[in-house]
Image 1 (cartoon, rainbow, N blue to C red):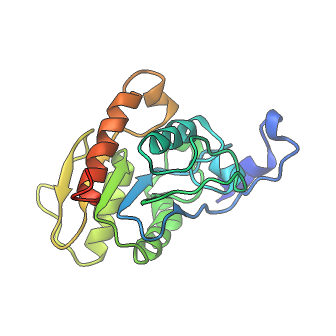
Image 2: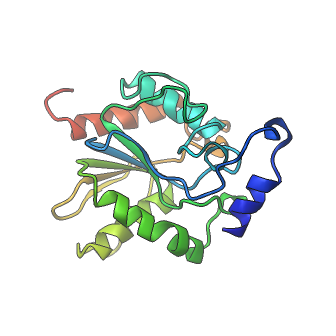
Length: 210
């Protein structure tokens, strides 16, 4: 919380005239979506600034361009809350709602600024597929299911790009590398790789259409 508010006060020079959101960031998208994407946390000068998940930074540029190619959004860019972006068939949320130092939330940060938010939000959604961006999002979903009374297999399913697991009476869980610059600028995650994951997610989420 302190870091979130400090970032909102000590603004990046290019955004010095803007009022930062500086609060927990809610999810965004189609509330009836069969596909839910779970990311990590708000970007310090992205969602923590704009107040909309994956908006105003490079991670968001990569994600929303991919969603547009897949026909899940009406535009390929996400710059600010009033830019007209809408999503169809997909809802995007976060495992942690407050920007963490170094973008690496500690377990207590996940507990304080993630668990309750995620549980309340997911209780309002009914996805057929959950796409977890990175290991923290993957484990956040498994932990959510465990809190809901679902037995988690042992050994616990491990995150990997392309990994999948279906728990009892629940959505299919797919894993993808996170859309962070650390992955997309090094080639660890390419647009083609992510497009393939999205195609699979859509095929599972909307059977008969693809």
